[in-house]
Length: 419
Image (cartoon, rainbow, N blue to C red; front, side, top):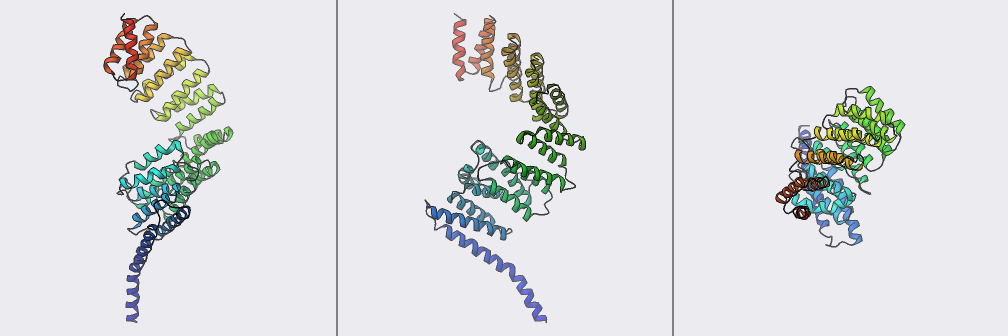
């Protein structure tokens, strides 16, 4: 009996070693098979490369704790690229990048440059930025790192990218059923459905995140996202308003409230319910502070005033926007240029046009738009016969921005004034 127990113990001790040996032998097999592919693979070889890559996917699922998973994922990505299956190559590269932050980007970037073709053309720069972004040191566990890879994938769409991305989410939930932030990953999965046009699946996914996780802090967010799909994608105003109202009723102190008021204002504006839109924009502005959503609410409010031909109120709202967001050059100048355009085209008020340009230049003298602002201001001074001020602003432009293409135009106008 004692000998039997010793034998069983020996087998139990040896089993992991045997499995490890089998795993290493299997991976070595895939490596050798990959070497048989030619530099310019034929259609048959591309099909073979995809089969090998799929097999490596199974290998990584069977051996998640093997140190060689990193090598397996890299080989899998290379094989998918050889197979011209850029969709699965991209998903694999994002997994590799996040699971192994130490992976050399110099090795991964050339593969990503090909795999990014899986993404819709307008999103390729975004995909590359997500891939090369600095990774958070707070993501220490494999589950946390893989979750961030899924977050990146949830932002991207492509004709054939959707399916492998969805598979990556399903694999994650199967591998980490007790992950502490699964509710958030469920929301990201909803985002993936939405960005790829599967709106009913997205609604179902958002409902799952809000209803199946009793302690989730994202119940209000999940409900608001459902409202957004009804409003923006399905053009179902009644259901959108009903869902938004539910958020306000059930989560009155939520951080989602300001966003909801902004989105309700947009719906009102689109339906030409301008009085209601202004009320909701004001509520959104009150709650959102200086967030990007607040900036959008200010702009929306100005648009409503413009649509109702209350140009003075629109102009003042845009100047207020520029003041509130003065710390952001881009947003502040955008608001002031919009005010200037309104003053010139709708109000026919040259003084207010000049006032907006002057404020933009005074508040943001180092902006990349400063040369154009100076030139436009000089032209405006000329139209009011303020030639001395026009000449002065042209000189500043030429001195401060001698290589800017607009400096030559300023020099021409200055020469005419000095004749």
